[in-house]
Length: 236
Image (cartoon, rainbow, N blue to C red; front, side, top):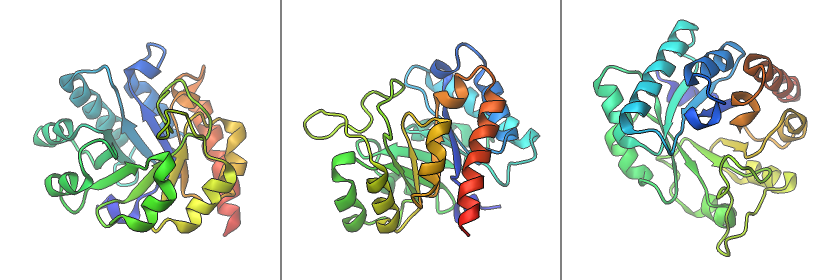
């Protein structure tokens, strides 16, 4: 089944070995997927290529064992080489997430094919102009943030002056209306943020530590999903 054309980014987990308090990445992903998360991104700036391939393999196995391989998208941050190597080994990886300074989306599309999911983090200070002027045809969703300043990715949201620009709910609502493709918002998102975020019209939220560093990751994930669904599904 091709997930690109029915992509669900409503509950999106970003995780790597530096974010789990020493617990296995696969265990965190298992908890999140069983709790209802719809998208998983493997992201690490410290793991080697081989370690990332193995983490991707473990994630794919966990998603399949949960019976959700046709529902939950598995992406890797930035590392086209890791995805290509993983696919060569028979690992099911649905796509890639890149930033504007990473591998161009056109290159990702060329190597990963038309069925792959490609997400892009848009630069904060250029965001509104970017979504109205760039060719978005190779891109499936925008990742936007930070909602709050976050220690997980301290450079998230840097503008041209090197200042962190967080996104107001008004900005996010405007962005949701302007963007021709789905938008997922994160950056320091906590459970208390979900109701107001869900009311902006964006397509989902992404979290790292709110699940991966929680005392009970499965419970934390379930609470986030329930809070999002109670608002977003009530709008229709």
